[in-house]
Every structure is written in structure tokens, then in C-alpha cells.
Image (cartoon, rainbow, N blue to C red; front, side, top):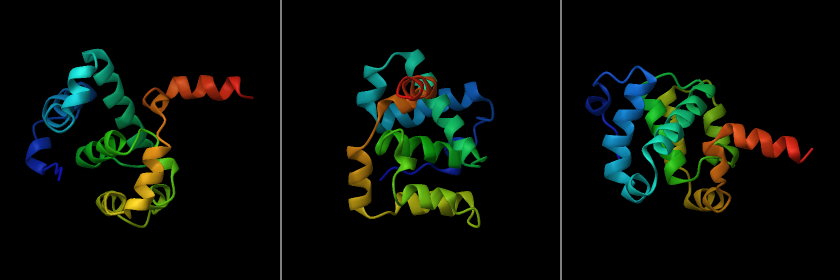
Length: 137
């Protein structure tokens, strides 16, 4: 099971550049090698930073929480937070960041299956989702 420890992220990842570099080299390369080797450096960086931005939009301010959120994007799909269970867990503002993400990782498999089947790769690129939504109006 993938675990992201405090020690792994304590190595000065407060800037977006440092976060992206750390995530790509320590998490993506080791836990998602098929994506690490298939994507260009620019694509990986953009995807990780867009994921971090999504995490922030859910009030996730800690590096560890942001990394876990981005990891859910890689595991389930970049739009995982639109699906039952995940959307509810992330909306529970009375819980800590860690508790909300723990709930996401601990959801029933059938909820994950639905989210995986509904994954939409465009969500790695928010501007593309906005363009698609504009055109469908």
C-alpha cells in the first residue's frame, strides 16, 4: 500500500516547483512507473501542479494532504472528487484534512469502481474541462 510519510515530504516542498519535483521523483516514479515513463516531464509537472491546485480548492493546505489528494487522482481518476463517497468525504469541513482524506482512501470498493469507470483524463487540465463545458452550452 502506498504511504506518504512526513519524512518524505519534510524535505522543503513548500514551493510549487519543489512539490512537483518531489512528487514526480519520489511518488510517481516509484508508485506509478507506467505514467512516469510514458509522460513528458512537462506533462507530469503540469498534472501534479493542477492536482495540487484542485487539492487547495478543497481547503487542503498541508503538503501531505495535497500529495495524498494528487495520489487519489492517479489511483482513481483526476475527477474522483465528483463521485459519491469522495465528494461527501471532502466536503466534511468539520473533519481535519487528514481525516477527510483517510475517508477517501477507506471507501468501499464499489464506490471506487464507479469513480474509476467514470474517470475523465481532461480533469488533469482544468482549462480543457472549461472549454468542453463552454462548447456544450
